[in-house]
Length: 120
Image (tube, rainbow, N blue to C red; front, side):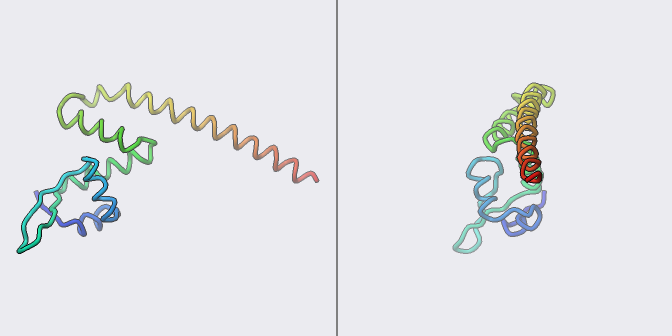
């Protein structure tokens, strides 16, 4: 598996160095600490790219980093199969449906207020 420095991972994912370090601190991605002279560097593998893509997709779908971490932990430890994720995903879908309904309600209120303003 090809290894890369943090700058290459940034280029590949569009994420900042701080973002990558944050994900690593949370345990969402992992690196290998490699000596280079008197310094040490973090090397990341291609799996980090895949995990970051999953994280970004999950975030855009409304998952928190904590929820994504829990999913990673369970699937990494073979405690949860993809089929067992179904109830969790259905719950998240229901939460998103509620948010959509709330937004539609707010949108309707704003449209009503705009209609009142346009009449004056």
